[in-house]
Length: 479
Image (cartoon, rainbow, N blue to C red):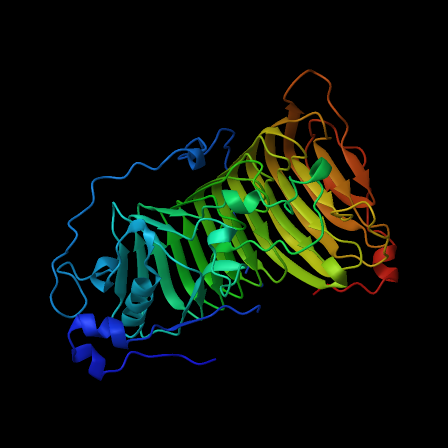
């Protein structure tokens, strides 16, 4: 992969000439696992802060009056406050003009700086940016401060044909980067969701065959020491954030929104990523609030308000007979409301590997369908074939899970593989009552082994005791 650098000579030339001679470090797109120990607190109400999502995607975001069009300039691409204001690099910020080049050149300048640099998308301006990869490694840390609005082209028809439709903004091989600010990242996803190939479209909601690519809004790949803080991001065409092969990820106080029927709009997805902290965040969307894929370990999720949506999920894992390994995951002190699922582990038949040492603690459920669910028969159609191998699920702890459930499904659902049972499922202080009516549904268990440390509501009598013989008979991949 070739990188382009700003010529040292060019930095001495008048800045307007630099725009004509400098190429950004960017490339066209190609298709391209410590144990947490936490004391359980008694939190039965939504954690604070937990602002109520009010579907801001249908309302324009009020913006203050624009700042001066020409910020003070000291002659070396930094304004008088020491930041790289996109307007210095020629950005217009009217939401219509293509400001990609300005962001690329600002990135190049920051990436080659010997000290930490701040790239600013100022308040009161909307910057339209094309699909781009921002590449490292850089000389020092970078802060992308979004106080205004960043947005992609408006829908597939406006997307350049030569640009990847799999992702919008990608940060590749970056060490020490922060995205923060009081502004908005607007994915402008509605036209993508309305494509006829989407799950909620077509006859009876079925998805017809054919390509249906939609871009992930923000993707980090093979990067470390990352922070996302204080942002609002809305209406991504697909996942809002995705982290692949990353380490030391810190997400704090962000607000993610998309309509409840927007397809595949996961809030935060992580894959092959470790040392992750997700704190004090609100997610309301059309899919998982947080989804944890294969290869993840040492993940701590705290004070999340999730819903509407599909809850917090580990998986899906083991698709296409693949190996999946996930361990040392903690979800605590959080609220899940009006969601299809609460805390979920989902695996495909035919996979291998293991999910172990997972703790769900101190979680309040509000009208949630499937508040507690392990599903080892996960399938997106009705024609999935039965297979004997499975991802081994063990050492799963549910502590102080309380609230109400949607009576369309049982409050607890443990559907485990025939050949590879779930083991060491532990329940303590679980109280789940119907949101409507007074009929309490019995929990569902299939080949699930575990025990109760306290009485539960409803009572759980279907968990099997001891250790299943098949654990010794089968060659189970424990990762």
